[in-house]
Image (cartoon, rainbow, N blue to C red; front, side, top):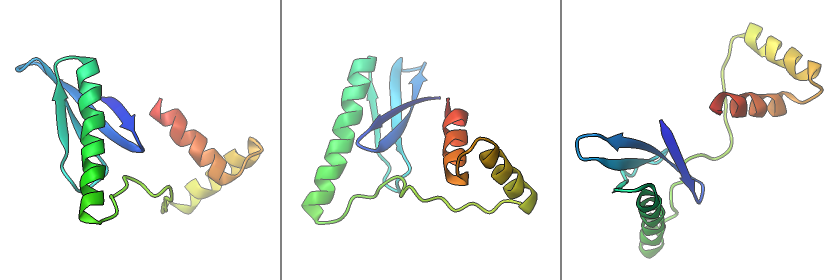
Length: 109
């Protein structure tokens, strides 16, 4: 899966072999927003235009645009996993929050 990001919004991109175009969809919001392009440059341009249109429409309607994530994440994990994560963080000289962020970043690479 390929990803694009713009103004804090992310999208999944795939290649449609039948139509020979790149197709994308904004992720993490309730609105269904899709876009497509024949080239990578056109795809990126359409993605940016889709986000800009979404934000403009929200402003026109006087509503706050939905954000894909707040930056706060609550996880419920088994106590053994919590303990192991705390030990791993302390062993690296960082907080559990810093360790979790690094672990998430590493997993997304």
